[in-house]
Length: 328
Image 1: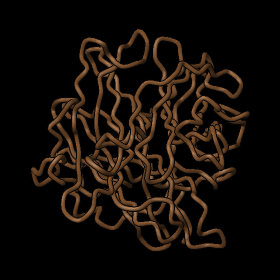
Image 2: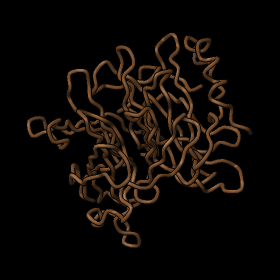
Image 3: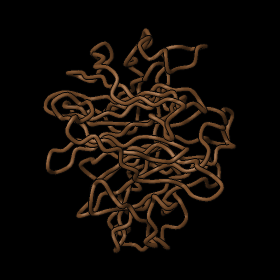
Image 4: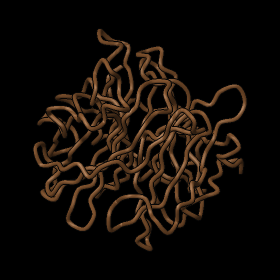
């Protein structure tokens, strides 16, 4: 399998925008990217003020890569090059201060990075906030803990995603497994939890024999809010079963429903990307509203000499005639 170059994808985008989902049932390979694109997990990307792209990932204490064209990526450092010792109460004792799942955004002249600290299988977890004037290595200031959970809670404080709605309200979605994806309202003045709206909202949950759901990401397109989540198992190399599901709502707080009208809190979700060919376990997505299209960023595993190493995947998102997203 040779990844299809993004320019070729863009050239056919106009013809696909109104295509029904059935015509896009065969998932595309990741678009062509090069450079430092391996050993990446839990990705988030932003377009910086100078027009370059900054890509953040779990690895190496929240690693940062830079690209000028969305194709060639170069490692430039980490958010916390010396680790994040304040996260040690929540992280693996064998590697204390090793955080996960950075979520990047830019508001009022500052970069905001929410990130998680946890260990596999534990609900003793926390979400922290850091801010920066530039988004670059060496520029970050820890702003402290935003959300925490313990093993006495029925949910988990990992995989944060910030969404700011058209009314200027800040919302943090997060969570995985157990009772699913949750949401808190934040205070825009501090980036921390609101003291006036303290409700914990449930926005998605698996049903049946598994609770495997995580990594929420919310975007707005037209009159709908779209919630992307990852189902099933991450980080098993080419044995990973991660897949990307989506639902939508006319309200940021839900209810989110899938194409068939099933609520995501009742196990609903419309699949938009899954394993295919040599691509295994695509998931933990972020979406960038770029000048040419909405861009889907994710990690996956490939059947090659390094099948256990996460790789950078980039594709474009189109919306069919019914307003449902698909990957191309």
